[in-house]
Length: 313
Image (cartoon, rainbow, N blue to C red; front, side, top):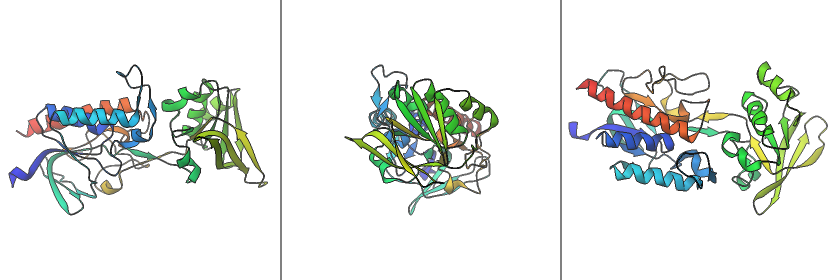
């Protein structure tokens, strides 16, 4: 039975998962990685990545994830194109964790969770149509491409206010669409928006459609939900900033999560409340949410897992 127990299983295949795999494999943990439904994670929906160190000419998201996967496989990481559907974690130090991919049971001494988070969208067909052509859920990732242009930010919370003020430094004008007649953001963030001259806030307004040519955004169709009047705004970029959903549903009631469902890690480590279970990337980070920070935390998780196994011996 001992032969079937893996030293390390990695759940998820974004920058954090693959970086964890590279480090775990080099530490001779013979990791096995389960990609989930979206191999490569959120970055596979990003066209250009210009802010990841080591790519002076930039690279597309899918290409970068293939590079990371090849590097992990070069050190003998076994990649499974399957989704982990159930988990039963041990609470004992040195206990064996059980995971399932469909009917297949997987036993592991350590588990690194790097299932990421999914950006929430409004659910418009046009969002999919113009994804990568002007619709984005990350101003820090994509704002640069809209320098000197006009953009829209949809949302009313801190994330939306933060994205709008960030974009205001790059864009000629930022229009915020807020569904209600007030912000949900903190007072400090509201003041920042109000004190930024090139941000216009349209309260009681919603995005209902997008128009453009060749899959590139040219106009937003908006409705005033009080007067029911529709209008069009000429813009090049539309940033949806209504939050993210961490992919933690299958770990609920076992791992400590915060009120928004993100995994809570101990201090500056990747350790969860369960021995031998670690978390890396956006699944435990709702602040930075960048490929480079995710990769860094994947490295931390692999080192934490290696040290945990070392202490067991």
